[in-house]
Image 1 (cartoon, rainbow, N blue to C red):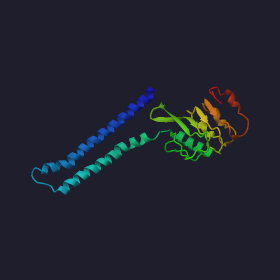
Image 2 (cartoon, rainbow, N blue to C red):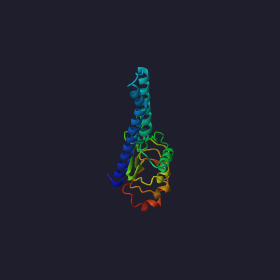
Image 3 (cartoon, rainbow, N blue to C red):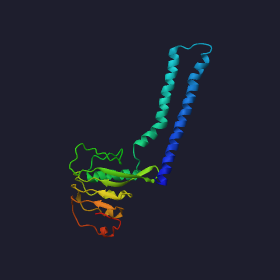
Image 4 (tube, rainbow, N blue to C red):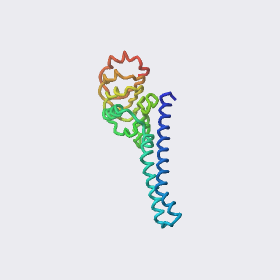
Length: 214
């Protein structure tokens, strides 16, 4: 684990601990407020059972609301992967350009396919995110949408994912030419074979020194 990732984890745990401590303090105050008077009056007079039950129910409801308010956002964030807004916008554009309609944008780094029956024997729907580059945020590092029968175009918006290193769009029906926008990417692996794209291989491929596999 990198120092950035470790720091982010410690910070998240500290925030969760403080939230839980806050809830415990509020619960204690609620019990003192709601049940304290009852206990005091119990020395001189007896309250009806229904009134005691109502007070206890009131405390339980308030406790539940506090947990939802204090811990809810933390739990919600833990279930999903946080991407920068510009990367979310980029993958929405990429999905439209590919004509890919099953990308789960609520959890974009999920590797789970939303297709019940893959179209081909070599269907892949894998997105890998790196959450150790920046604290409290992840970045898309690898996309494999091969064998999905996608019939859009080679997406220019791939250039808007600055941390993307691997892209596999092979065995689809993508058309058009190789976007010049890709010249600014840091791709180390690119596979676009078995598609319907046209045109010549751009000149920038010759200066794409970081590309290890084509």
